[in-house]
Image (cartoon, rainbow, N blue to C red; front, side, top):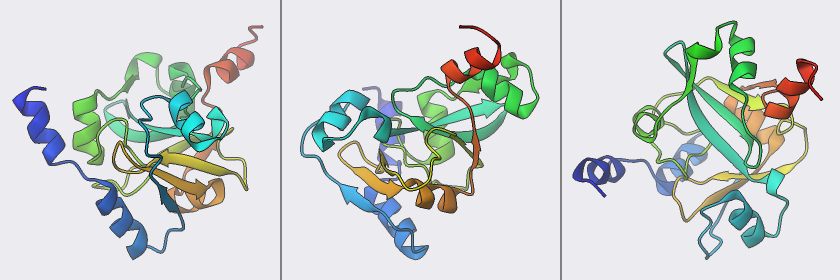
Length: 178
């Protein structure tokens, strides 16, 4: 690890910061410490005994230079074309923030990023498959050792997110591909 990476991770927010943020705002959720490494969606799903679509990823995208948080099921791929369509920009105006940018924008390291509780409030899009009401899901819990269990209803309430079809398969279907 480089000195710069070490320094930036030392300044990152963590699970305790997320917990304090949630308590101050009466956010309903539960921290889960699986006790085993969960470096992938499949590993997290296996550790928790849940389907892989119950594990969420929170990604920072830059759309025409403006940061947006995108939340999707961990096993889904986000379509850059779908994001461009949602924002009315060309595909070239949409890019995934690199890990250093994501840390600077959100305050959390990649792999631990929750869907809220960031250094500053991020406008958020949630893939429509994730936004289905009444489901229990697991997101980054602020550290690589913690996951956050919450309902999709709470996710949508706290983030004030818009639900949009953002998966690659959805984008292909809308273009008429098989």
